[in-house]
Image (cartoon, rainbow, N blue to C red; front, side, top):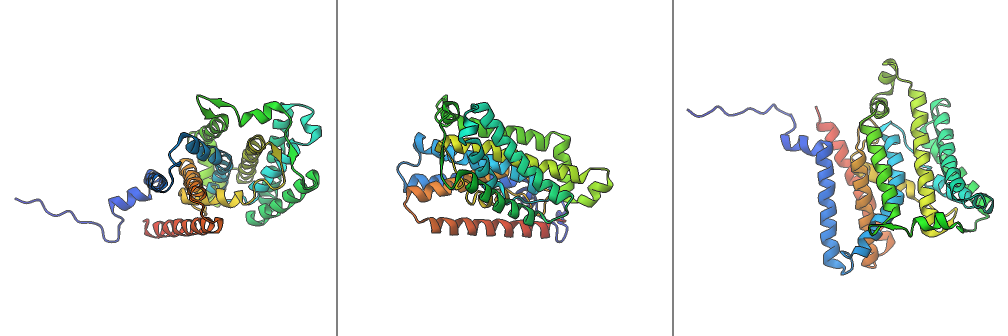
Length: 329
């Protein structure tokens, strides 16, 4: 006797749709995109698959990747940070002044981290206690940080003369640049913090429903401040990395980095409204954009075409997110 047919609940998402909407499913999709980009790269550029070029991609992804870690926390927590690029620039300038460099590499590192954390603290206080929209606060910080960086540096690039800081970018361990190891370490710490600690669970709860989180006893204001300080610390780390890579501290560093970081977070599956996201997805998003940039450079394609491609990818990612939210039960 034949088994009766299994009925599907009308309007319910299929098993495939549920898998694709999960964090693992989205990450697998991004891996597939990366593989496709690699196939295109091998087909269109002879130098794409060389060890030197692959390390170039990883090195380029490292700095924006560190910033993206902080931005991921902020967006999952229901905020936004438009200031990260210029906070990084300000930190790089402050850490490479003649006075700062005279105290040695550890003071330079401390200065960069302090500037980043300080900017994040100001953002967090204004958002949490000033009750100003994060978009406005961080946009104002972007403009202020840009102005301060230009004022301190007199719009000139400051040369890194400290051999320890300058040597970070040139040091390799097992053939891999030290910058990549720093990136990996930040990602590892961020993943543990987001997925294995109370801090991470609170971040998801506050991003999903801040009022419910407050009624449940969570200190939403203090946690919001902590998220922006964390983002600022990531900017400080990235400032030392870019100062080492370019051997300069400059107010021109980090231009449009905030948009690249936010775009990577979005295509990585993190909701702009907060409450859901994965750090691994954000990092895969960084690798996708970095690989696209590398392909355009190797094929001598115009920068404006590259920006158009990135814009299309962002729009498609948001449309997919919107559709997934509407179809979810």
